[in-house]
Image 1 (cartoon, one colour):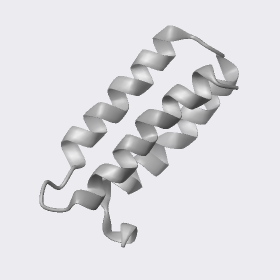
Image 2: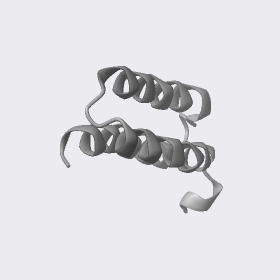
Image 3: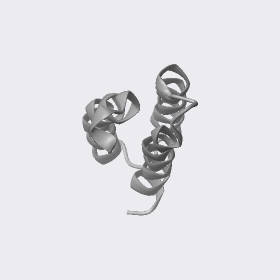
Length: 72
């Protein structure tokens, strides 16, 4: 069901940069805020309000930013 979702595609592409920045700059607040705002913007631009499944990748990516920067 998630194959046709545009938010999941954008988030998957952006996750490679998130992982690199998180491992390179551990607990850096500027990159953390940049990534958090980027995921929120991706969510607002690509969310489909008629399909509730489009919210799942957005929430997952926001939680992963917290987890990868602060819970290593």
